[in-house]
Length: 142
Ligand SMILES: [Zn+2]
Image (cartoon, rainbow, N blue to C red; front, side):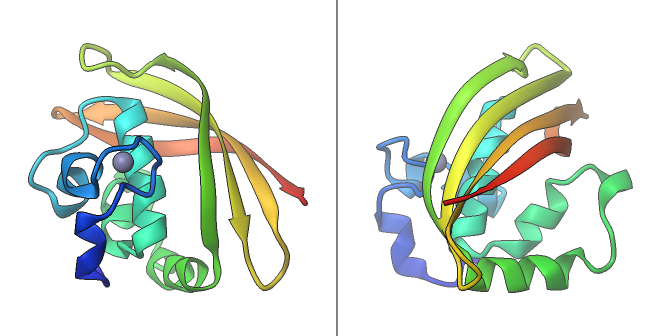
């Protein structure tokens, strides 16, 4: 699923300071699903960085998946370079919760300009797996 296998030895793109294999890697390759909403959010950020499109689609709540997602995500991950992730706040979303919210800022570079995405994402847990439901987002040009 990963485009670049060497990335598994490197520090995780989510900037936890941990190697990818001990951070978002297991969630993305399916061996150990994210336990909290924040972990899922981080793994999705990392999936954007490494181009793990299937994971991005699979970790979206089924009712919010659209057929064109795969293509759009493919395009987006190819042109966007994610630079920095900052978690601003979290609400619920722990292993014992069934819903949660994570507010974060992510900086990126793209051919259309550099910017900052600020989003409050909503997450839901179904059968012990966290899913991204939707979010309120704001794009700020740099
Ligand atoms: Zn990570």
